[in-house]
Amino acid sequence: MSGPLLSLEGLTVALSDGVPLVRGLDLAIARGEVLAVVGESGCGKSMTALAVMGLLPDGIRIAGGALRFDGTDLGGLSRKRLRDLRGRRIAMIFQEPMTSLNPVLSIGEQVAEVVLGHERVSRRAAWDRAREMLERVRLPNAAGRLHAYPHQLSGGQRQRVMIAAALACGPELIIADEPTTALDVTIQAEILHLLDELRRERGLALMLITHDLGVVATMADRVAVMYAGRKIEEGPVAAVLSAPLNPYTRLLMAARPDPARGRATRLVEIPGAVPSPRAMPPGCAFAPRCPEARAACRAAVPAWVVPGGEAGGDAGADAGQPHGVACVLHAAPTPPGGRG
Image (cartoon, rainbow, N blue to C red):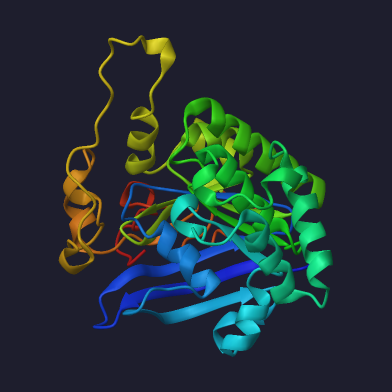
């Protein structure tokens, strides 16, 4: 069996002074697979995506680990080779299209620019591709909108433009960072359905960063839960959502709005907040907020375990990986008289 399309092995992303934002992250995505990455804001999801794309902000750097795409070490690529890869084989759909699209360039120019940056085609051919892609994402009056500017489109239409630009060069992997955050519920559903339809049609792999566990349930094959820069649970979607192992995952699920509970029912709230990277508590970072915390949680960072399996290994090696967790509640007991 071939290896994963994208693999992150012990990825650490840090500020320039060494304070880590993402800590020893292991993830992998197979061809054609959807991996959802979930967690509260500040857990390192978007920073992970920017690291993969080579778009980390100034003052933030990859401080350790490896990033590999189709067997190629991304960390060893020159800026030019990384730029050639980005947009052609890996593309990203950003959270807010109004801040990602250039306000002084027309929609057609921005989609065509992607094509011209990666393929040796004429400007006319690039504009034809732009029109075809806008039609494919079902932007109303696509040909007429080629000369429109971002402010002349609705939020849902701008997001369709972002998807068209991302798909213009036929990438193998799409990273979608909260692609429907600023949209109303009806438009969200339309955009997600379109993204899933295009993914299946083209056999794309998708890293979907989201807060919405309902989206995870309907679109993803696997889900990885992040907290304070670490992966704390990962497994097949059905397994994680039906029997979450980490207390944090259980609380995330309990905090979801549930129409069956009625509008007057108070939502479950996770007390406290994600800790600052500069003030990380000892041991498990979630322990100060966890209703099931015990002394061992504060003694050391919990190891990765697969209940009923072996501890320590990366649970993201392939699409058939088991359901793993980093939590002392599932740590293997220490044998009497032994070190465990």
